[in-house]
Length: 303
Image (cartoon, rainbow, N blue to C red; front, side, top):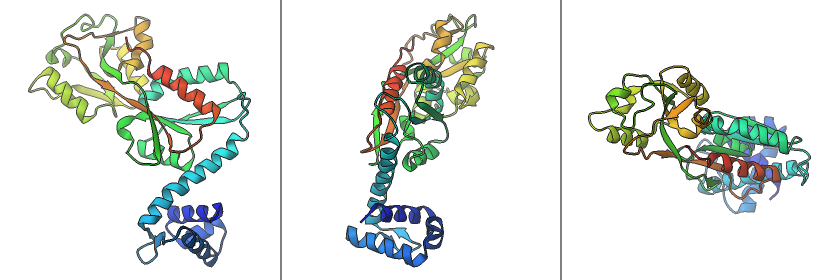
């Protein structure tokens, strides 16, 4: 078995065709077939059901997970060779969900610019499915996303951040700013803005229970967007009410531009985010620093 055979296997799985894989690898089909056959002999079993649309066997599924991990590790080894211990160069690629984007983007960019100016920091977004694929393909080094978006797959290593509170936020001077008991009917007099991905079924059920029957909180949400900073800015300049992760609004709360409605009884709702890497991957020094920065900012006080 060798790395070239594993790469041939991965390309074949990705293209689902011997002809397309051979063309992509600049091989003849017989040469690719010999490589796959040699790999199967080395691992001691068939990886593909060739008479069933080239679907993977049970052994093939296991081999796919490990081959992907080896591919990423090899790429990481080559890239880490250019990253000096004193962070004199290199790049870190981090995928962020909508809420982590709003919380982390500016602090991470500032910290890396001031402390490690030679390290390139590449931040990206996307759907959870796309981001997971990018992580497995080595297009990003790590993800910071909501825990609900990550499957319990064995090739993923998860490091959970502390839970972060959810709540209601309005502009300073808003009629609801001084309310300690927020009735649903009072809330319905204003538009509610919320993240499109933050409204899980669990959160909706608990909000319905908090306000009491026959409330359906989703009916109060007028504006949804995954650009959470835009939602918070809308709340700052109008009578719209924001519901979501309080840390996103914290800078404006500290400046007195926004007010967190301190509800009684307390609204004990929270979200949890997670730092995701590939299991068994050796993290380069710059990514370790970035992980600690993410932990610091994602664990910040909400009030």
